[in-house]
Image 1 (cartoon, rainbow, N blue to C red):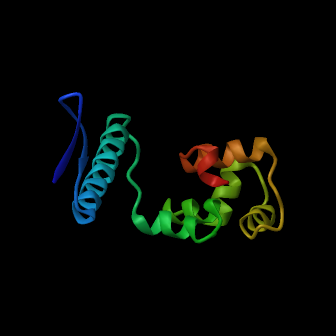
Image 2 (image 1 turned 60 degrees about the vertical axis):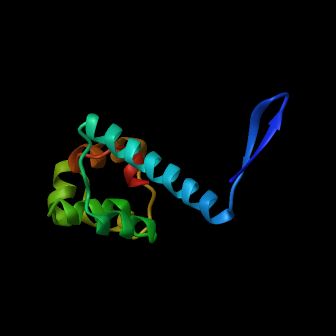
Length: 117
């Protein structure tokens, strides 16, 4: 490592790129640990990676959470006061639910609306 000194004080450090990359990775890991600790402090539900992977792959959040919660389409539709065919169309991306229906779905699935869309 090399230091660049200005007015008798070290101002910059020059280091090999491999060492720089290690520092960047360590900082990213620390950010992840802090985010995890903050989520734990808020008592957020920990979801299996498979749930996140399915949603990130573009699958319907409503379907993913419904299946994760062990609900049939009929059971979720009944809880939300909508028809099973309507729920099926929402999950398939053929219909866009109203905000009111989204609120009901989120409540029944114990998630935030943002988790569904």
